[in-house]
Image (cartoon, rainbow, N blue to C red; front, side, top):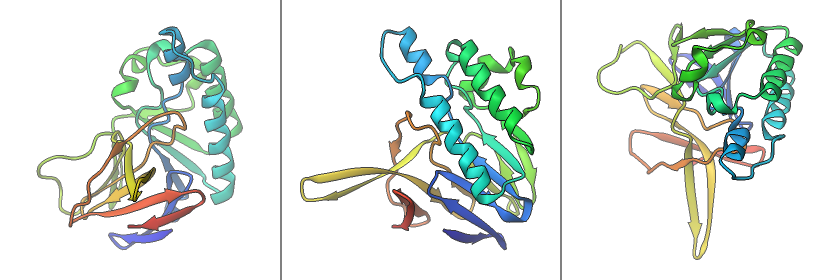
Length: 215
């Protein structure tokens, strides 16, 4: 679904990403690579292949939109303990196969990794935020007063929308957008989310299968 923000056309994608055609920029948030490995160390089972499957989805998405640049909007990994040799190798392979530029905005889950960045990931440029007017990309949602001429794209929240009809309920990942910022759903296939209430100043776009619905 294409929408206009600050006179720029952007595409909200059902693959849980944003594409900005003007700059051939694909933006994803909250990949949480190594989450399964983190939980396995705590005695809880999650499929180890989930991170690789997410990277495979990302590769397909890059080809689909012909993205030349990819920006990870924080929480690339889930924890330092989950960044095993296999996780390092999987993301290194993805970096090698993608010919464009890669930037990683560091999120709260990336804190430990920022000090021990794998040498195999040298291609990925680390930063606290990225500004390409009229947009600014960061991990945490904005609070308080911000520049009036800047629109923020953020992650961190993992927004979900709960739909109910009688006893039936379903929770869907969603984009939440107001006049100051847009919050992306988590790209990770094994991360949960938080239900966001409807506010009069916000637009909510739910992802159902391969379609997006504005609610």
